[in-house]
Image (cartoon, rainbow, N blue to C red; front, side, top):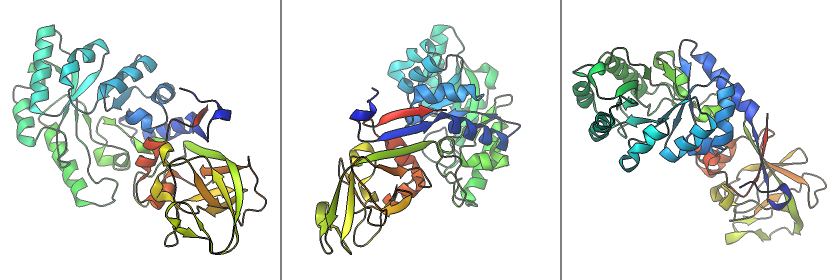
Length: 367
């Protein structure tokens, strides 16, 4: 549902051109590999129906989603793409894979057996990915199961093994020893499945040439969040602006917000905007007397939040921002405030900020 700008508490601007430029920048990191795109969680919050076609126009031919429902939405938006469903085989909806031309990622012996039986019954050798675990210990066949599956050779399987994949646990932490072990294990496993394309590189893996293989599958890096610790993110894709709904004067020593957690250190001007944790702007990003929370930009000046973020409202100390009145613009993400800055103030990661951006915003897509 698109909410009109004059009925929304804030405007979320999504730059599809920046998304495309980020995709192309990641693709250049692995010139010998195909660059896919992970668009799960509604394309990390920006909208799968908009992100999918934009990425396809940038040259993306392969996508990864988490759920069948996401795959069906993407299929309608990108009819010619190869779409993999990451979270295993949803057995009760197994017919949907064939009906919507979706490729399950088989991460357990039960998944493999169920999909093989389905293909035999259907009389069709449908494509699927085989997910092997190299150290994440989440989804994926263990090494012994993978070796057993490979024994007759890929061509003997009842389904078409279109991709062999694994997932990094710590690639975003530069130099973590588990990453090197996973790269080695995956290289060994690829030898069991000759002729099957391989995919290991996530966003952080795009910066590791040894992990590129045949298909890289960046996710969060596409959307402008930090994907390797200590490395600047790519181009920002989202921007969040809200109009001031009220400005009030607070005397020195008075408190602002729930819990009286923030005390005015001087007579202060406080601007209120109609955004809160119900909109995905996390409660933990607020300010208290003990910590400064996320910043906001008003009249070009970085201003601290004043007090806790509540469900629907945020208070901002605009004392140093000059004249501020109702209707003036406040930038909560953008103009030098990244999703990672908000995440750091909230004690979380940019992924959570992106995927939590709420549905009460007016969404404006630009290219």
